Length: 303
Image (tube, rainbow, N blue to C red):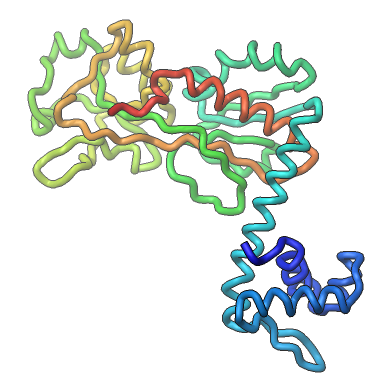
């Protein structure tokens, strides 16, 4: 790589401060040194990044395009250095975590004792919510989100994914018969979510496509409520493996229409605002969670 980090830093700082002089002051360098770094960068790239006038500096079209890449590279280097520094620290203090109740109960709660044994000075505060919350408004440090992410202002760490399946209890199937085809679901008691509507699209291959929109006979706001209704024999549901693995392994729930089911996996991400004061607690918890998830059968992609 011909370009150096010092040259990238000089370029982005000049853009941020608006002048070579201001950038030199912020970087504790001489103005001539910053100017030479910019010139070297432009020579290496063989483009003009900044137009210099007597009144101000303006980004060229090439400069605009390169700026985004330069910021990304510097942010990644900064994060890598921060991660290494944090590993030398001893995490302590309060860590507020939010997750939907099924993930909290089936994944996080069983891991709390082991985490506390490893990091006794981290105080956990666990909150369950079935909706996506504003982390700042709810004074939350870290949230676990299932499904596609929408808020780009948050820092995200992928933790894995979990497959979804159509399920029912043996008692329900004995009473009503197992549906032999996707079309046979008509007239059955299908249990779905009040929101978001996307959760009421089941991964079933049918004549019109690969996703079956259902009209729930019973709608609930919580996946855990959905699970308990299925266990009680109330109807057919579509749930994620992370919350039903034990039920399936012990025969309390049975997969329905397995041959017509596509392998659709919900991404699992941890999200948080970048905050150096909290980073060591966040990093140690996410490292521990990722380590534990690698050992979970539901988190392993099937072949």
